[in-house]
Length: 70
Image (cartoon, rainbow, N blue to C red; front, side, top):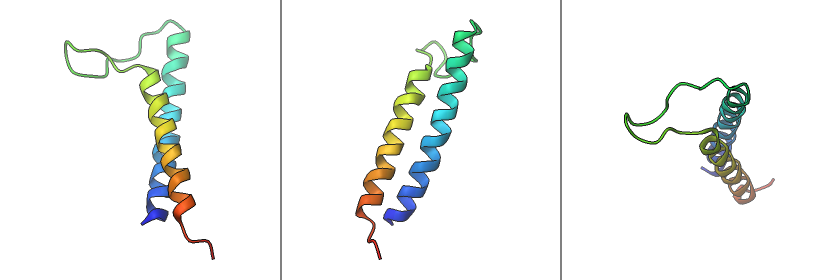
């Protein structure tokens, strides 16, 4: 189970990192990325994806540490 969590967490972290970099690049070029979020609510910014990627990479590290090494 820990190995599956490590693998899934790694790929989700990688995808979140790529999305954060793309949205940050678009923001740096003064181009507004498409609205993400509930209509009339607060938009999801690149920092949300950056924090998500950190969370998923930490999940990967924690799951890897619990995996039996043989």
